[in-house]
Image (cartoon, rainbow, N blue to C red; front, top):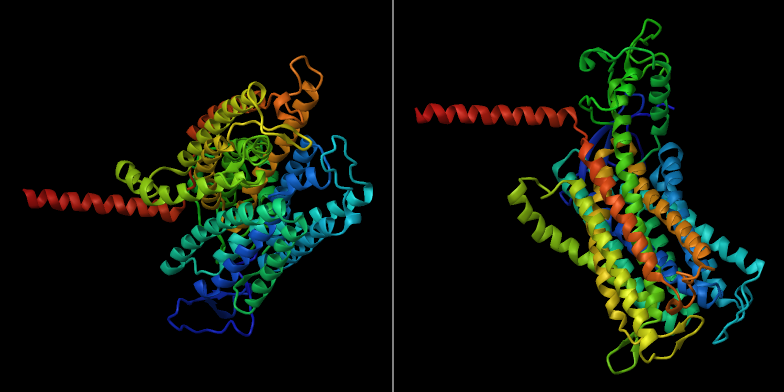
Length: 615
C-alpha cells in the first residue's frame, strides 16, 4: 500500500484564522496536489480536552487495574501465583494490543476514530469489572479467614474475562495513539509548535504519574478498606467523564487521516533485497543507488549509512527495473529508493536496543506485583493510631520516585551535565536508558536482601498476627520496601522516558504511532516473560528439598532467591545493552548533516577573521 501525502479530515470549524491566542495557521496540499487548503493548529487551546481526557482516563484505568491483583486473590479467591500470572499475561496482552492498534490507526482509521472506539471500550470494560464486585452472583462466596476457599465458576470467570477484554481493546488503542494525537494539534514546522510538542510530552508523563499516584492511594484505599463496589465505581465515573471531555472537543481537533501502513514499505525493501541478493554492492552508494524522492514526502530525507549494506541491494537499479514518467519505480516490490532502505535500517538498528529494554522492564513488572504480597506480610501500621497502609498502595513509592527524579533530572542534573558534555540533553539517549537499566539491577538486588531480612524476622521474632490465606505477619516495617521501589522509580525516570524519546526520534516520521506502540510491546514482552518465569520457578521448586520459592506463605518460600535470580539476568542484560549501544548509530537527516557542515564552515570563517584581526 502506498502512503499518501499528509492529509487531514476537515470540518466546518477548521476555518483559516489567527487570533493571536496560540493558534497556528499553516497550509497543506491535499492528495491530488491541486487544491491548497488552510489548516488551523489550535495547539494549547484543545489541550484541556486532550489532557483532561488523559487525566480522567488514566485514573479510571489505573484505578481499575492497580489493585486487581488483590481483587483476584481476595474476591475471586485465586492463589497468589495464579493471580500474578493472570495479571502479567493481561498486562502483556494490553501492551501487545498497542501494536495492532497502531497498525489499524495508521492504515485505516486515523488516530481520532481509533481513540473514539478505545475510550468507549475502556468505559464499558470498567463497568463489567464493577459488576463482578457489585452483583453477588458474579463472584465466588467470600472466603473470610478459611484456609480453603471456593474458586470462581465458569460463568464468573467468563464475565470477568469479558471485562478484561474490553479493557485490552480500550487501553491498547489509547496508549499508542493518545500521545501522537496530542502532538498532532501543534504545527511541527513552527517554533511555537515545536516548543508546544516538547511541553506536551512533559505534561503527558506528569499526567500519567499523577494519575497513578491518585489511583494507588485514594482509590486503592477505598477498595481495600471501604468497599470494592464503591472503589470500582469511582473509575467508572471517571471514565464516563473522560469520554464526555474527549468528544466535547470533536470540532476543534486536527484529525490526521490514515495514509497507509508503513509496514508495506518495510516488506518491499526486505523482499527487493532478497530478490537482488546476488548483485554486487555499488562502489558509491550515495550517488549510485536509486533515490527518487516524490514531492510532499512525509519523512525527512536521511543521510546514507554504511551499516546493514545487504539492504542496499533493494535500491540497486538493473536493466529489468523500469520507471514511471514521474520517476517512481514501476514495480515497488523490485526496486526501492535509498530513502526507503535507510528508513528500514533505522528500524533494524533499534531492534537490539528494544530487546534489552524489554528484558529491563522485567524488573519493573516484578516490582509492581510481589512487593504487594511482601507488604501484606509486613508491619503496615503508620503511627500509633492503628492506620494501615493498603498493600497495593506501596507501589505509589515507585511512581513518586519517578516523578520527583524527573524534576530533579530536568532542573538540576541536565544543566550540570550539559556544562561537562556540551550536549543539549546532558547525556545521550542511550546513556540515559543504560542508567535506567543499572538502577533496575540495583533495585532487584536490594529487593533480595530486604525479603531475606523480612522472612528472617518473621521466623525468629514475635509476629503481628496472620494475614488471611497467606501466613504470619513479620514485625519488620513495610517501609523497608520503599528503597527498592524508589530505585525502580529512578530507573523508570531514566529508561522509560528515555525510551519513548529514543523511539520517537529514531523512527521515521510516518511511524510515530508504531514508535509509541513498540515501547508498550516491549513492556508486554516483559510481562509474558515474568509470567513464564513465575510459572516455571513455581513448578520447578514446588517439590524440591529447599521448598517452593514462590509459596503462598512468603515466610515458607524463598522469594529472595527469585529476586537474586532476576538480578543475575539484569546483569547479563546490561552487558548485552552496553555491547549493542557501542555499535549503534543515531539517525542523521540531510538537513542535520548540512547544518553541521554550515556550522563548521561558519566557525572556520570566524577563526580566520580572528587570525586576521590578530595579525
